[in-house]
Image (cartoon, rainbow, N blue to C red; front, side):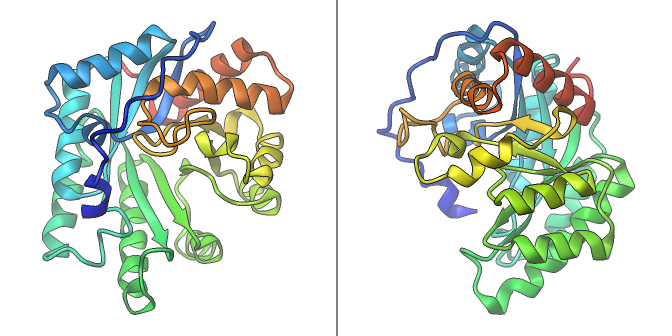
Length: 285
């Protein structure tokens, strides 16, 4: 969607953090926006190498449009062992594309790519979508849910100001076995509901924001097998670098914040997050 490309190119990347003691995975990034470059560019390679230098050696590159999902699949093809892809129409994209049927056909074809391991990001976004377009958004979400089940791939959900309807649609249609709430933004009660239903909660740099005490309480509740970490690069750089250009390297800072809240060692948590990412998305090799 167009507004996601309005990256402030003058923003500097957040400084590289102290390396993690155990390598782990960024479960959600948009490297084409971080770099504004082709999948085979040196700019993309540098972002991946910077992340690897601090212990973030694998990345899930996530789609939001038909054309950009092609970029995701190509990046994953170019970087075996380092990148996997997810493909979808973002909930803000689906209601406004010129030819929804054609775009969904592209997503369906890309979903068969061996290095595409998830369908996403899909879901609902009532913050940006006016009421008159929400039915189309909901229909797109349901279509993506069915595609995830048909292809036996994880579902990656974008949920903004729409918690109740997202949960309701998942019950109505039937959630895939591996259902991931990207950049989880709910409270403790929603976290409990998701945990009970077997959903996976992925936490981003928002966990470190001063105005997010509910997220810090929620992350304490999530068992390892239902927990992921992500950057949502280039958005949501963690404190103390909020406002900087976010990159996958910042996973190191987010994992440390998670470990502190959960009263766990950074090494243990990083290792569990790594194992869980590979269980959900499959081997990166």
